Length: 157
Image (cartoon, rainbow, N blue to C red; front, side, top):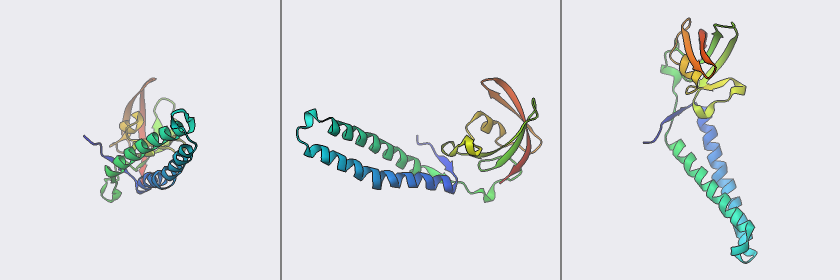
């Protein structure tokens, strides 16, 4: 069964740009490397040829996987989402009940997660815990360090 993943317009475009680069830039480059290595003679002892063929196999596998991901991707239409609850593409400010520390995260698809930019996956423990919660609710989140509680302070888009 194929897995459907949801993406923001920016996230889906990033995947399409990567696929374009793989198909139109990297694939021709590897084909040229194979041709050059083939021109050097005996292929049975040609390390350059073997390395280029291996790189081609890896590239083709990545292209195939990316094409499947894009084929099963769905854009998120946040115009009909209940803005009173935390959903994908929501920016949620939470407070750790134990130490009163506050942090803000944007909930995104797994492939768009980037902790440096405060984007966490809805499949992560914190993402799962705050998904669907309203302002004022407490999220009990099981982490490797034990149970943590976070209060939802604010939800925005």
